[in-house]
Image 1 (cartoon, each protein chain N blue to C red):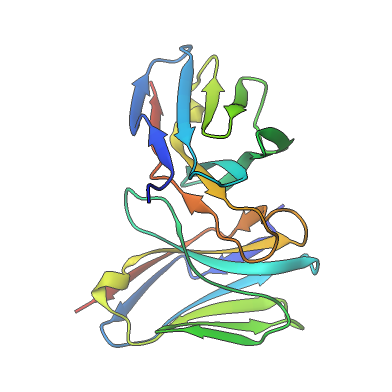
Image 2 (spheres, chains in turn yellow, orange):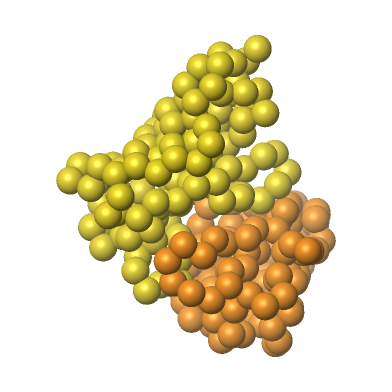
Length: 113
Length: 115
């Protein structure tokens, strides 16, 4: 049973544009929603995370928007750069589970010149 | 500060052979996780440890898979006997204590190919 659904599967954005990746979850007990970035040949690395009592969190060019009622959250990458080209995973974890993460299926982002 | 170290980086072996993947977590981290990544199934948690004790192995696909953590600085994931469908990238991750917000730090993975 897939508990975190991610879209789109792939995304092509021009340099300077906004990249938007969406995730939806089913389990209302989730209380930790991180985004991970993965480059080819490397392990995923935490990019930014949010908890459900906050509607938005911004770190530099990266913003998470969270809609608790809709059970959806999204990653926005402003002023996208070629160096942002990577695969992005959303994830969710239950409270008290030591961040036992359930990952989305990933979005492959390509930022073109 | 050294990150999570996995070895080998690549492993190619024939079906039926025993495979052992190794992981050295970040010093001081209390939690260790093993994941498998494939195109079809994405990133799946196989098992995780807290203070060297296995806490949740519900993701281990079958009895051919086993994981151990004999001490705080070393863990192994073993597949015996290996099958072609076990081909994947296997990641180890570690995390410090604390509940919300503590990130998992991933190694660079072991790319396993079973012929």
